[in-house]
Image 1 (cartoon, one colour):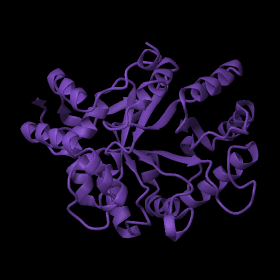
Image 2 (tube, helix red, strand yellow; image 1 turned 60 degrees about the vertical axis):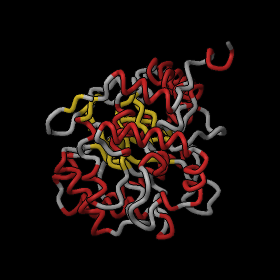
Image 3 (cartoon, rainbow, N blue to C red; image 1 turned 90 degrees about the horizontal axis):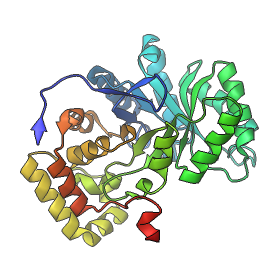
Length: 329
């Protein structure tokens, strides 16, 4: 494996837009539930110092502290220095239930607009760069979604619309409706994608690639499964689900750990670097609980995995193959 010397974080275009985002996207889901406001702000400072300009959140994040807590913590950091807003590409999401109100959820035009206004208030900003549809809403027709998006874009409250957890067919349907309206359409898809979970390769990534949509990979460490043994208490690697997966995939993970050791890199770094080597990936989300975790992956954009290493990883974690050949031949 060839290792480049230290340099600033690298940037990629977000899909077919001219917008440049850092290859590492700072995920904020831990802000509040697992990381207090002070440490969350310190992580944000450290991320900006590293050159990370892409920050992702969602309106429902907050866990037991309450819906909207994470956006509020991020807003408190942004308001401390107004210049910070212009230095980052700010992304949040809409779809999840925000209250018991039957209409305070989903992707109706009404909820999209109201949820955006609420996010702007919590974030203490006047616009969101990337507004993402957190999940599909089968009751919301694409025309209704684009009606709300067009309004928010015209008002300058959002810059681009993206999706998250969309299947390939929904990406195509939503973008075809946008094309018919003469609109840019979805510019990104935030998808579950990692060495263990590669089903996005069947339909999602090909659809995104053909429509010029940048894929933002979430859970690139498979909930900590690809990060190796836990070194601290309270993390997701201590969960029953991860422990069961460690047992079920024991041989596979042992082979992976051995490969990483031979490369002289951590399991986390190799997993993240592998994701960035895949075609169509615009950014990979890292969600540190503290500054040390962020620092431990700062070198990932500089890791260059050889064709031999990538083949070895495919042997350990087999790809799904292209659709429909993967299941119809």
